Amino acid sequence: MKDGWYVNAASALAKAPFIEHLKSMSSPFAHLAEVRIKEAIDAGEFDNLAGSGQPLDMDGYFSAPSSLRAGFGFLKSASVVPPEVTAMQEIAGLRQQLESAIGERATLLRKQLQMREVELAMAMERVKRAMKADVVG
Image (cartoon, rainbow, N blue to C red):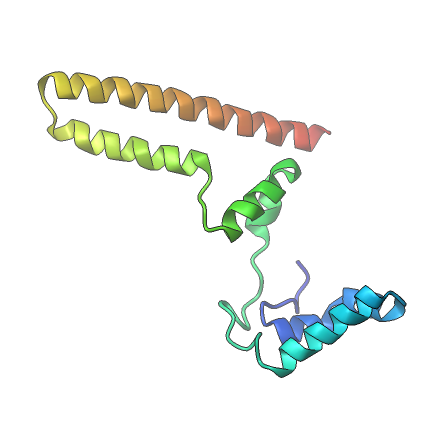
């Protein structure tokens, strides 16, 4: 993203090109949006946001395929990790359990571990294909 775009909402909103676009519109919704934003700024609702004053890191956003960005955004805003990350965490847990397991328990854990590793490999292959299709298409 361009330099000068910051998480500090008051600063970002003051510089945001869409504000000028909203001002040029005669829509009652545009006017209402502008009024609500100004009220929130005046009330200080944007003063203590996480990361305030820091540049936005958009590398992660743009490194994801465009077909997956919206989904990743929804997951992030809901504080939910992607299923691939959850699978990686489960695999790590299974490996740790397997270190101390013996007998039938170890056999069961090995089977579960193999199944989760295959599922993860398939999920990662889908992500790779989506990324290739995004680059090509």
